[in-house]
Image (cartoon, rainbow, N blue to C red):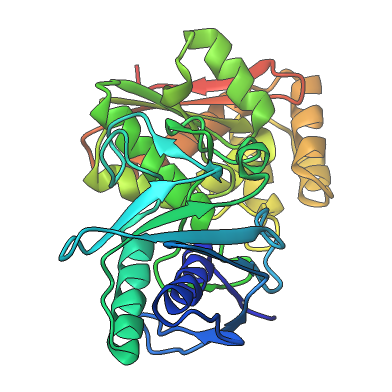
Length: 354
C-alpha cells in the first residue's frame, strides 16, 4: 500500500518554501526536506504568496492509502522575520488548535504543533537558511483551512485541544492503517486525565458502550478514552502511567476476544474462538447439544442469544475473563472493572473483583 506524509512533514515543506521566498524573493518549483530517518521527499507547493516581510506557502497533504481525515487538506505555513538570534517559534493559525489542558507534551496556551514536527520544521528551516546564506530567525504560523470542522471528527476536543487540528507525525511518514494517530490519542487522553487529577477513567470499544458507562458514572469528557480496538495500546500505556480506577466497557464480541487474550480487537487481526467460547458456556451448565451448536455459530451474538435464552450468565463470565486479561497486562497499580453492554446499551455483564 502507498505510504503518505504526515501533517508535520507537509508543514515543514511549506515552511521551507516560504523561507526560501523570504530569503531569495522567489519560491522554488518544489521543496525537498530531510526526515528523521533519512528520507528526502519532494513536495509541490499548492500556493505561493509573498508580501513584504511575510511569505506563505501551502502543501496538499497526501496520506497515501491511509484513511486519514486530513488527506487532501492544505497545510499552510506563513513565515515572518523575527528578531536576530530569536530562532524558530510557532503560532497556531486558522484550523490549528491550541492546548487548553495540562498533560500533553506542550504547555497550556501553546499551538497544537507537537514536539517532533517542531523539530523537523526547525531542522529543515535551519538547513535551508544555511544553504541560502541567511538565517532561520522566523515566526512560523501554521494553518489548515477547514481544520476546525475536521477536528470535530477527532479526539482533540476531549484532549483539550480547541480550535482545530494538531500538527502530528514523529517520522514524517504515514503508514497505511497503522492507526498510530488513534493510539497516540489514547495515550494523550490518559496523560490529560492524570494531569487534571482524575482518579477514574473509562475506556470504551464504541459509542454505545461509552454512552452507557458515561451515564452510569456521570464522568466528565476528559475521563472517557475512545479505546476502539486498541485494548493493548491502552493497557500497556496505563501500566507505566497508572490511573487509580479503570472501567473497560464494550460489546460482547470484542470483550470476548479480550477475555480470550487478544489485545487488538479488530476483526481483521483477531477472532473469537468459538470452541473455547462454547466450553466457557458449558462450564455454566449448558448441555452437550447446546455447546455443539455454539461451536458451529457464525457470530458471538448468536452464542450470546442462545446462552441468554437458557438463562446462562455468559456476560458476567466474559467480563471476568476480560478483567483478568487486563490485570495481567497492567501488572498492578490500577483497579479494573469490566462492563459488557448489548447493542442497545443495556448491561449484560459485569466484573470488578469485589
